Amino acid sequence: MIKALQQLTDRIEQTNSLDSVIAFAKENAGPIMKQPMVSKVLSGDFLGHPLHPMLTDIPIGAWSMSALLDVLGGEELEDASAILVGVGVLSAIPTAATGLHDWQTTKGATSRVGFVHAATMDVTVLLYSGSLLARVTGHHTPGKLLGLAGLGVMTVGGFLGGHLTYSMGVNVEQEGPTLRAVK
Image (tube, rainbow, N blue to C red; front, side, top):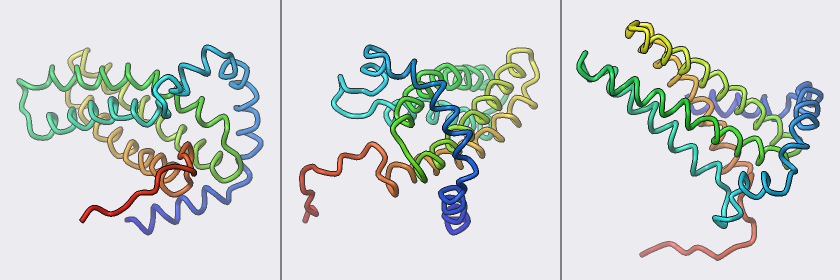
């Protein structure tokens, strides 16, 4: 599985046919993202580190816990699971906005991986939005199935996001304190 995901990231990094779509997306989102107040909020400067990685924990946590309730809980936990799906969908909005802001500064392979990461997470949000709609209209089984599909897509998107940070160093301060192993 890990080898397949690594091969996927390698292919995405080398798919320069995405570059024209990426250029169009950046050109059209750029003016909004470059507004000083918007940029200051979305960047996380006020925190001293990027905001996007921190915000991802909210939808990922909510959706993961809804899956747990769907699989292990009974009928009595369906409403709680629906609330978690809703929290995930709502929290995905600022999370996506901060990710879009961070993506604006990427180039080449990191832009490509970021673009596919965003597209994957967009599909995740659509699946969970469908799940929420199904649940609130009383169709819990289709809602659960859409949620589980969303969990699978989210896992791939999360892997790509982790690859951007940990393998490609996006928004990672290159100069910083030297870390030592704890003995």
